[in-house]
Structure formats: structure tokens, C-alpha cells
Image (tube, rainbow, N blue to C red):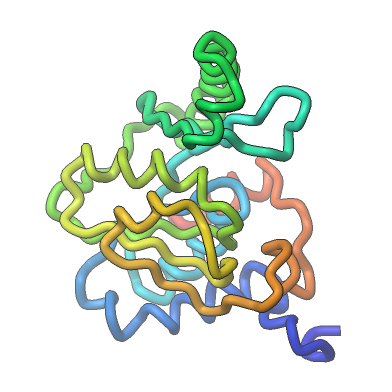
Length: 216
């Protein structure tokens, strides 16, 4: 099926990661970047980017803060180390009390994933390093905003967002990054998966196997 349709650009996340690695190579390989994947699917893409750039791989857990009764809609996001972002629309739609409850619930899941994925190990040192944040695609970009803020706190020299695909518009706070590197911006854009031939679930077991490979 791959290649039959104009809007299919990637066979799967592996193919997207390999292509994204080639896309980034000339500009960043010599800068000894730290590649950070955003779980879950972004870690698979990041793994192949890191291989192409011969770079260190890690991950930062970030979770969308869902609007009550409309779980698919994010009012913000929370990442590790209590890095939280609430979009303006979220503040307008939901009371502070409810927002704090949502944060509390999602923080538990963030903490669980950190313990499972990194076994409680701290994040790598980012000070004075080029950090490339990799996801499998960007729809609203909300989950990346607190990750950018976390990297800023860690004194990263440069923060780069990289993804195989995005829409033409996303959260304006993504522009706090030094660069945004996107390969494909399809029109019309309706979902990250539209440019993938295969865009299945990437579960915890898959992620842990990949991280184990990266360490050996």
C-alpha cells in the first residue's frame, strides 16, 4: 500500500525516523545533540534519529491534560518535574479547582511512566547541549510546551523540535524553541497518522524493548 497515495509519506515510524534522521543530519550531527523522544510513538521515531546522528537517546514523559467529558481535547499538558502548561482556552473553560484535580491525576501517570521507562533514573544533563525533541507528529503541540520549559530550566543551549509531520498551525508556545524542523505539512491536515501507511499502537513493551536496544 505504501506509495499508492499522494499523502502517504512514511511506511511506518521506523521509516519516518530514518528519513527524519537524514533530514537533520547535515545541520545537527556535528553538534553532539541529545535526542529526546516523547512517549510513546515519538520514542520509536527518536530511536532511529539518534542512530542516524550517532547521538545519545533519552525520553521525557509528557501527558495531555484532558477536558472533562471531552477526553480527546487537551486544555494543556504536564511533563516531568511538575512542568505544567495550561492553554488560555483551558483557563476559560475550566475552573482552577478542576484544573488542579486534572493535573494531580495526570501527574500520577507521568510518574508511573518515568519509573517504568527510565526505572527512576534522572534525565541526562542538558546544560549547554543541543537538545532535539522528537515526536511522531504534531497536531496541537500542547504536550511539547511543558517539555520545552523543562529543557529551558535545565539550561539547554538550544532546543530543537523535530517531527516527520505537522499541521500548518499549532500552539504558539512551540515557537519558544530555537528551531522547529518539520518534514511534511499536508493540506488539508486532519491527523498525524494520515501520512503513515502503518500507524499502529506503540505500547509500553515495545518502548522498553527499544530502549534496551539503545543501551546495547
